[in-house]
Length: 278
Image 1 (tube, rainbow, N blue to C red):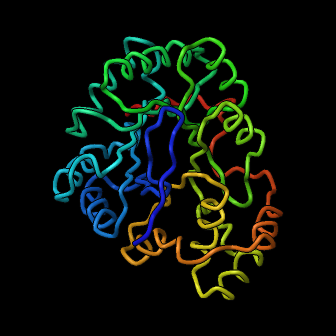
Image 2 (spheres, rainbow, N blue to C red; image 1 turned 120 degrees about the vertical axis):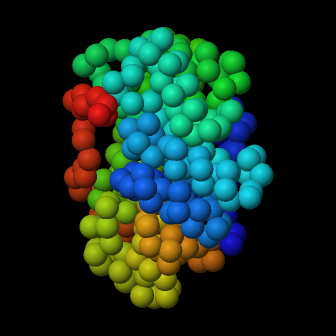
């Protein structure tokens, strides 16, 4: 199956369509990720806060693919901010994954109420310098968080993974990210399914003979975003990757762009302060 990659600001390539594991049960993670890898995914996204890193690592080892052909992302829990704590937490994640090197490591949320994300980022810079990770980035960072990191630290994040879907496009955050040379990675790229009922999407899907999910994901891909759809259904897993055999017209894209209503499905990064600790 044809796929594409994005070159990050440090020269590392990341497959543009990844497989998300948010809310995948730890007991089902290895099987589900193996299904995704068998379908052709080469980018798997997990997080310490999902408590399924072990299943992801087991699938990567069991799939038979060379390690350098599978791109693995994980993320730091909110309760592990701080320089020394972040370094310890990374070692916990590396042990859970069973991997020597993590391809991309993200600060999961900025948690501005603790004011530790700059200090935490300096630990990420050390991990990068030590070769423990190939790229470092952030998730859920708003423009002011990005501006401060760029101003006060040495390494510009490679990725900002944020909620983006047709009805919540976060244009200021996308623009701030790309303005700093940071790739935008969309989570909840289908709006947790609710966006797929929009006429602007259903009509295109009918015309092209593809699913509504494929239309929404193709909209992301044509905009240059990385996407990490999640499914536990083998047929949906396969179709979510099949995005390169058709193309949206400029009119299709404009119609989907017009769905933006500024409605989040997740937490607000300006105030989110949950620890993600059990």
